[in-house]
Image (spheres, rainbow over the protein chains, first blue to last red):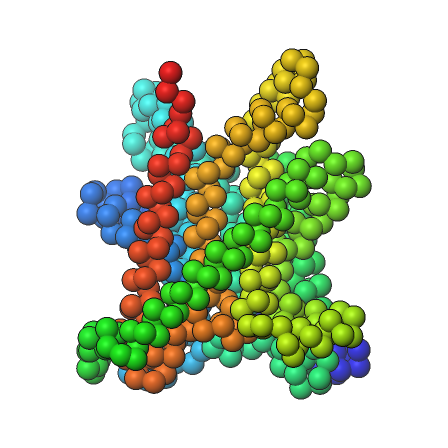
Length: 212
Length: 234
């Protein structure tokens, strides 16, 4: 256990990086995902097709391959090395955007078309109907799925191991090998991931129950 | 951007052979992991629905452990930790003599992880069958086991067929994580080609294309297996 205590700061820094990557991935993915969902809604047939291909491609490919793509491609396009962190951020944001745009689409589809028709019949403009009737209901339906996706992303950030970025898992594996304490360190890492995800899942469940 | 394109590269030896070997390993991992997951998931799902409160809690704990720890960490645990915790002789056998140690370990990790997800899916399918069906079956004189075997499970299975194909796509994608314990599957092969030739676009492009083809096939299959497509014609 001493080896773990001595390296506690290093492990905590790793956990902070995992949580930071999750936050950036959620915020960036949500922004780009909203843009994609809007393009699908208002972009006509061509816009819809572009979004369909984007979503299908990112959902077909393993995240590790996406991380490799950007780890290799971003420096090549920019003409200078950018480091593992920047390329991982780009990979997560683009990857998550595909999933978030689908969640937004599902949320919008969950609002029955009668709601839109009723709002229009009441004399609201198309935009007002979206803003005051459809989006609030859709948002309520999406919220729990957003958070569940964030928990999935938190677990997925551990894949930056393959580009040697020091997230929590990579930090744990470095400590495990350096101190020769694989059993204790990996079991501790399991416990940390388990408790964080379980806590977050419980929070989502409570939110779902308290939602009207 | 200065880049010498060479798409023929991935069709030439030895790289074409590497990609084919990678696909074979990816499919072998997915199929073996899938078989293990299916065998484990059905009993776990049934125990979660039908067991005593203590059994239900245990089955729920099983699901939550495999779902709340990243798969890559589960791979490390099966590879580095579990052999240390086994009885001495068995641990030594696993470390020294087990055939295809990386592949076998990856299949176990992938299968156990997926079994947690499938158990959840099976349970949601069972929950989606209206409660009255059990009561009706019992009223007709079937035992509870018969009610599940002949009435509930066939309907539940039909409901989850389409999501089941997307779970299979998940296991194909998740099998790439086996590269972290040394299985050279498709993603690892493309990484190796990039490493050898510096032609990353072509190497990753070829791997991406192969994954997209697999996903497309499964997607078409899922469309055919949706409950609406399977509706009983009368």
